[in-house]
Image (tube, rainbow, N blue to C red; front, side):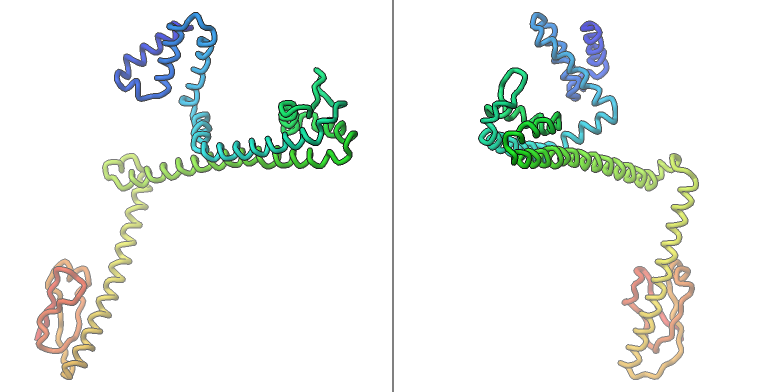
Length: 292
């Protein structure tokens, strides 16, 4: 088996060359195989070769997703385990003080369930896993009628709150990873649609729909610009009439820029005489003159 692992390692070195060391899993393989040769007399060291199975996390997407969720919730998990450990220690001390005299209830080796702090911690672990908790509660309650209350409180907090809190954090991390992948996929789709070189990879229906949407947006923009320009011309004409006090005479103003002439559909306006140029119109590159 070790020879097969060595052959695989050699092939990876041949294929990846200097990039071999960029992958932590390949570095782990190299370290494991090297230790297997150098420390072959130590059975404990050789047993670490089984950790090569962790490479499956990098090969199977579902396992890789779970591993990513565990790493992403590292700080939250540390906080939860710290609170759980503190809660565990408080109840262990309290149960040792309350039930250390219950010598009738004990393990098979004769040690009391709550005789020492170590025994109490083991008993609380059994209660947290709900293993034979009803029988243990009845035995303790036969000596102290009120013993059921602290035991039930510990089970509720440890089994139904703390453990479910850990599961909730993991589920939230998995949901975030899924959302990030969906957002990345959507972003890649938008980039592919925006790149003309990638249009061959897009279905014709998507291309036609995209162009229709672009043309609709352009038409709406042109219509809005035309209405704004009409209102601007009327406002300027009214302002000039009120300032100059000249009676309205009919003259025609046309746009000298051919592209703008087509753009605004030969828009015309009536203004007062002697107005040669309009610089306030919001169309760059256009000159407006009147004809007598």
